[in-house]
Amino acid sequence: MKTSYKNIYTVLKINRFIVLAVVICALGSSAFSGWIVYDIHKKALNSAFAINTDGTVIPLKWVVQKENFKVEALAHLELFHSYFYNIDASNYEKNLEKALWLGNSSVDNLYRQKKADGVYNRLLQYSLIQKVLSIESQLDLKIEPYQFQTTTIFEINRGTVVDTYELVSTGNLIVVDRNYPKNTHGLLITNYFENTLKKISDETRKE
Image (cartoon, rainbow, N blue to C red; front, side):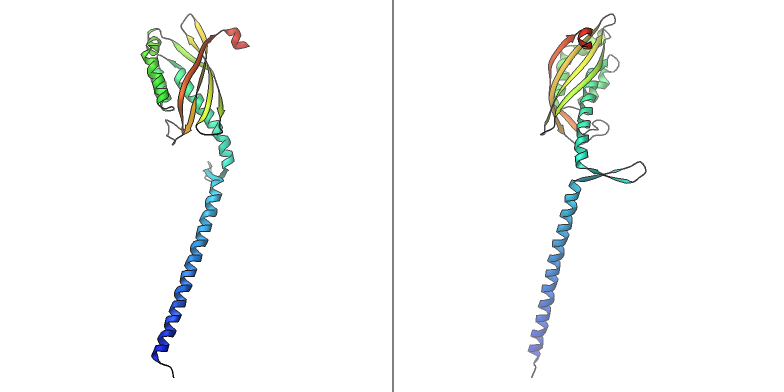
């Protein structure tokens, strides 16, 4: 003869089974979702996306971005040296302000030292024109901070006399947040140092 107690036990067993089934399904669903997220993240590490001019999405590989990084780093160094050394009485304040956004305190300290030495006063007093002729940089991209060495050839026009100089400078590059338009490459020059500065003749340049 069945009693109400047996019916209660039967209901409890069914409820327990349902609860266990729900828990197992939830755990399985969570595990599957976690795997999907991991797979997407793994694929995302190898790909990035850009928007084309017609609005289409273009996948980019990180390998390509690594190659582009060298291009950006060289462009950053060329931009900095151009701003910092390609100056005259009319543009030096504007150019130096732009250059200071591309480097850290080591660049600022060099700027202050030059200012204290009267470099920019002479620029104004004698209407000097300092023009960059070429900028060549070598990079070591094995590990951050990335070391560089740059050779800058520039001339100083004193009106009747034009002298040409070769400057070799070194430093490091670190990755920072991009700042449009002040630091579009997202790189910062650190430990900047002017190693050698020598006057060169036209014959030396031709060689």
